[in-house]
Length: 111
Image 1 (cartoon, one colour):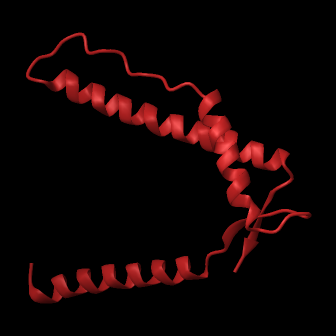
Image 2 (spheres, rainbow, N blue to C red):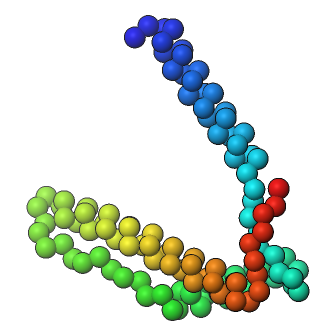
């Protein structure tokens, strides 16, 4: 690989990164709005809704490893648990979002 082809690859990657940064700067930011309450109250309602969601959503555990050859089963279990934890947090977010909607909050785009 010569210097010109390395430069072209690097320049192409830099251009792609620059375009992505510009697009993300123009992206619409979603905010919670309520017809009767000021925007600052969303923090209080969100804390309430997350607390309720965490009490309602049970946290599953990955099954224990059945075979432990050189620790590989433990690594696989940790990876399984990480996936389960991500799903658990997503479920809490879904419950909290539904709770906020029931309280009258709506997501709205803001630039």
